[in-house]
Amino acid sequence: MENNKQGKLKFWADSYKPEPDAKVWQSIESRLTQEPSKRKASILTLTVLRIAAILVFVLVSIGVFNTFITGSSNIYSMGKTMELSPLNLNDVSVYFETQKVKDLRIAYAKLNQH
Amino acid sequence: MNNHLQDLVDRCKKRDALGQKELYDLYKTTLFGICRRYLHSIEDAEDVLTESFVKIFTKLDDYKGEGSFEGWIKKITVNEALMFLRKHKLHFQELDTFHLEFGEAPHYEDQLEEADIMDLFEQLPPGYRTVLNMYDVEGYKHKEIADLLGISINTSKSQLILARRKMKDLLEKKLNISNGK
Image 1 (cartoon, each protein chain N blue to C red):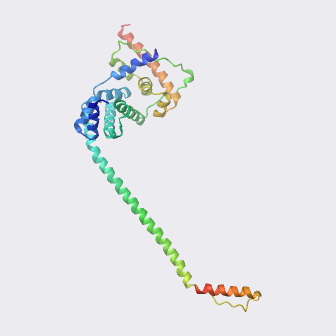
Image 2 (image 1 turned 180 degrees about the vertical axis):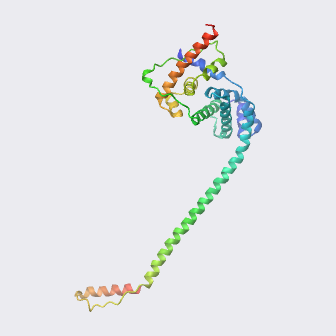
Image 3 (image 1 turned 45 degrees about the vertical axis):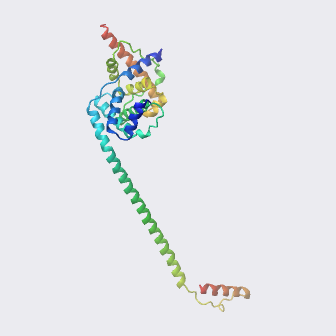
């Protein structure tokens, strides 16, 4: 029963077809002609934004790389100029194991070579 | 879809202006009917009709031929009308459905003309009108109405109960007047 009543409303809704004003088509038409140029503009904006993003990424990457290289080259040059003061074992009374002192000497010599 | 309509849709996909006008002429009254059912003012209904057709023409490539074409364009129009209503802050009177009885759908008398029913629709507050349209005409479930309008299921139910009650009163008044009581 209710379905039947609702059916009547649906039937009315389906058959209710008022005529819109003629100006509606005019505004649709003008919107449709604007649409492709709008789309072109938005594609252009998107491309520009993409290029800008890539540029920023490249610049940031170069900056980070430069900082890293400069930092590591500084450490390298510091290491290059670094010299150890001569080892004087005569003053060190604690070294009583000769083998260990020998090893220490070799290590010291190797370190000084680099 | 029949061959003529398929051909028309294909022409519109290629942005053929004459095809677009033909498609508009074919469906303008059907879709304007939907807009008028949802929106009180004719100007608002015309704005929504414009937006709907612009969307139909620009999104035509999304229609893959699954389901009826008329159903697809009607759905776009209903969604546009709902979007318009949401944008303009559609007000819903919150009520506790626990105390409300589910009235049955009003009996729409045969002698009522199209214009009479539209006149009754126009007297309904926007919230009632929207839910009545969606439930009794479009066949949406309360859950779907709640999701689409951003309201609770209870609000959707209470709007329908109140809309049917109001519609019944308006119908009785209208019939009494037309019967000369």
